[in-house]
Image 1 (cartoon, rainbow, N blue to C red):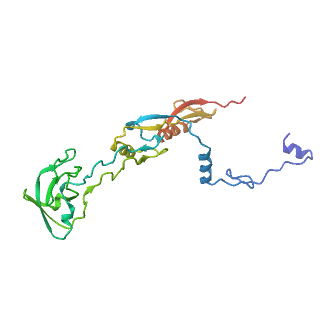
Image 2: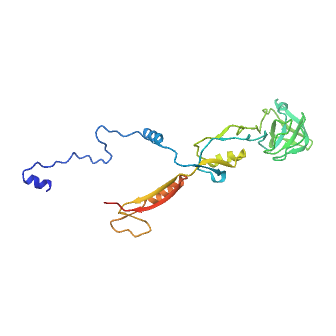
Image 3: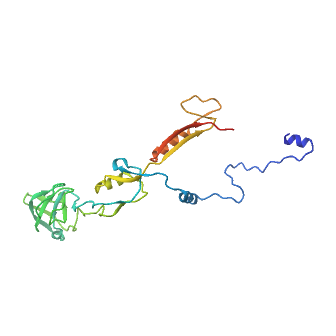
Length: 259
């Protein structure tokens, strides 16, 4: 018996509620939870569900650090030249005048440290990345120097330590380089390698299952009936999960259980 049958028989007619036409409306007295509050609630309720593993840095991008990574050495390990030029004792070039220095017969290059010292009043040819020889704390750009092979000449003043990199300028030994929970970027892996770290203790990649449900949902590889729609969410979710650095697990499709 519908409401019109009741009305015809003199019964009380059922009346509809006021029209809202708003699917996002909440019941009276209930408010939306602010996004920051909702995220805080989620974070407080979460717990780690994955174990840890030791991972080569070549495979660690996008993984999360499971324990702080401590630098075993400095980077750079020794003071070195940031440019190609000529190295000397910087106290000689603090005046606004032309500086003339005798040219040391050797050359300092990256990976080939000089064994002899550079005496006061001398300059030595030095290449980018070369360890500063004893007696050198400042480098003048080669573009700012004239030389006849016996001496070098350039204008002062030049700041003490100019065009050099200090030992430990990037990382100091025993410093925490990477912190627990930090997501590893390519630059983080480069930093780890710069101090000789080849492996990092990381959380295993989270595995996320994707299950499609519904009688109306049809896989995109099949032909959809007029009353069906194609499963557009599955490929989107699988792609997003992979982009987040997690492992997507396809759980297939299930129709509704109407029992």
